[in-house]
Image (cartoon, rainbow, N blue to C red; front, top):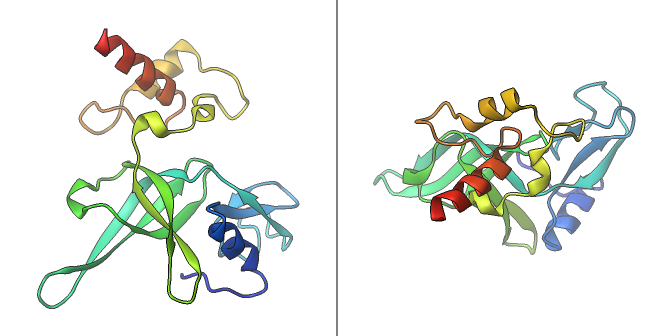
Amino acid sequence: MTIERDDSSAPFFEALARAVLTVRQCAECGKLAAPQVRACPTCSAPSLDWTAVSGFGKLISWTVLRDRTGAITAVGGIVELVEGPWLRARLVDDPAVLGAGLPLRVEFEGRQGGEYAPVFRQAAVADLPEHHCATEAGGALSGRDQSVARASPRSGQRDPFRACDVTLAASTAAADRS
């Protein structure tokens, strides 16, 4: 679903013009949701506020659109933000580098008519925000959970969006350079 400017979405577009990605936050239960929702998907409350998010996420799925000649016309994807909500957005990387779980960061693209839209590009693990290294309760992971967070389902690579893996990746990279 494309987000069109109206009275309800105007704060979203105004934030994009300032290079800030926002999502909806339920005034009743506090859960975050995608920008296009009109009621909380958790508790159905109609009171939603706008809140800024980090702009980092991971690729869940993608599609490559081609014209009749086979030339790529667009690449779209579903991005899970580190804060939880899923967004549909254009991807600006070569489709050959795309894969499920790929870390992404938001960029802001001007469109005809003066509006901005969020697009996503591959992010380096070092770019990811450190605050995602703690559990939702704000504490450090136990040793067992840290060892689980190190493993990725894909080829033994680290998954930077599993808890604490950002810190582990940074410390592993520093140890590798020594």
